[in-house]
Image (cartoon, rainbow, N blue to C red):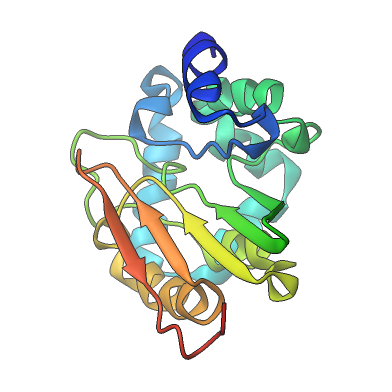
Length: 193
């Protein structure tokens, strides 16, 4: 928080409202990852079921269980980003106006099930999350998706469902994790900027 407030924002000249935080694997409190959560993740990966994932994200009791390892991140994000207050979700949507253009940042969480050192192919975003953060993006001139892990780290069954939605809504998708940057440029002819 001090680095963001004392270094990043002064260096960019931007207000805190322009910051969008997305959780990564180091934001997961692995001490809060129970055997039950590991079993739940294994079941999701085995069943490959978006409806089950939606149920987990919609039911308040199940959300608390699934989001517990990201509790530190969501508390920090809510303190830093006023738009997150009142939400326990580790994802967010952030509309801005920049230079007279409407910009929509869809901050997704790939870290909800990031329990191990090597999670490649075991991570899940979920259609529920994608639809929630892209809900109001149609009104924007520019839509940017942002999440920590590249799509290659997301379980195949989930990537096949969420990628078409990202492609049809986002002009640009930014990811990290690999200690380098990556960007996916979406066909500019699809949605004029």
